[in-house]
Amino acid sequence: MLRLVTTSLCLYCQRAQVTPLLFMRPSSSIVQEENPLAVSALYDLSVDISKVRKLKGWVLRREQVYVNETAALLRNMGASGPVIARVLELHPEAILCKPDQMEAQKKLWMSVCTSQKDLVAIIEKFPSSFFSSSSDHDNQKANIAYFQTLHLNKRVISKLMASAPQSFSRPLKLNKEMIQTLQKTYLDLGGKEDNMKTWLQKLLTQNPYVLLKLPEALHDNLAFLRNVGFTGDELLRLLSKLKGYVTELNPESMRLTLNYSQETLGCTEAELRQIVLQCPALLYYSVPILADRFKGLLTAGVSMEQIMETPTVLELTTQIIQYRIQKLRSFDYDVRSGSLEVLDGTKKEFEMSYGKLHLRRERPFFNPVAPLQTED
Image (cartoon, rainbow, N blue to C red; front, side, top):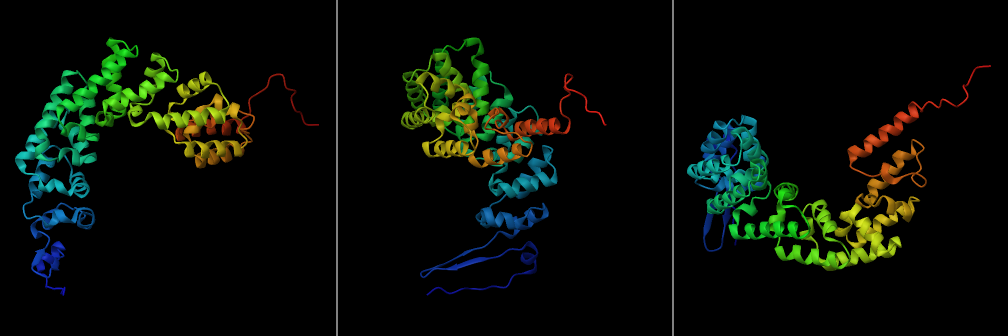
């Protein structure tokens, strides 16, 4: 039978807000309690202990911790008290990293960071990328050396390490294979070698996770798109516009999407290819999502011809379309007879278009040939 065991807390533990977690097992008892020294040190650094308990409570129960050493490392790089507290709240596991391991990581990261200030900014945003396992160090070092041979910008390499740390923790040969596949694909599709570094750098910056995909996925998807009529130049445009996300597609899903889109729009294959070039995102929307968006636009009175002229409206959810149409109606703009371009774009772009309509209503354009209105 399980029996709850209670204990009284000493004043020190009460100050540190340590809550012993005691469990009784039938055969033996294992006491798991928070490390009072760890909790106290974190408390002194203004870390919200309740957040740590909620997210990674097991860290507080580890016997060997390096709270002060971790804080000292960050402080010596210029991190402020609030920044240190945020880092430890977001990634409490940092206090489990040994001092020599953290110093090795710092040296490694400084090889791709322009300053300690930049490194602190990365750690604040991606702490888990910096405080990684010591077993990853050799792979990280080898991958950094390889990317440096590609003459990529330091900021690009550091961004890759920060946002997609898995790609640097895995064996070099996997990244090398994907990079070589991307380079060969770029040249095979008609890209110029002089521009390849810039193209690759932009692609990796926009989608660092492309490194984690299989080269076979890229081959299969591009082969499918070529079979449906896209030229090499058009495929290169698609690959660039899709920011490498073409590796996340598959031929069957694209086939279903293209067939549905062509049937719904009532267009030719050539017209459909031009629509896809204008709106490459069409390739990775499932049929149910497209059906819902077509329905929302048609319900609002938009015609298929209008959608074909501005296919990028299909990137917007039905809720966003409805909201924007209502906004435009307040200024007497009828999407059924006007261009859909005013509906299109990001939130900021729409607000700019919306603002122009507002100004036009407040201050109508002067018509020099219109008769002047005079009071009787």
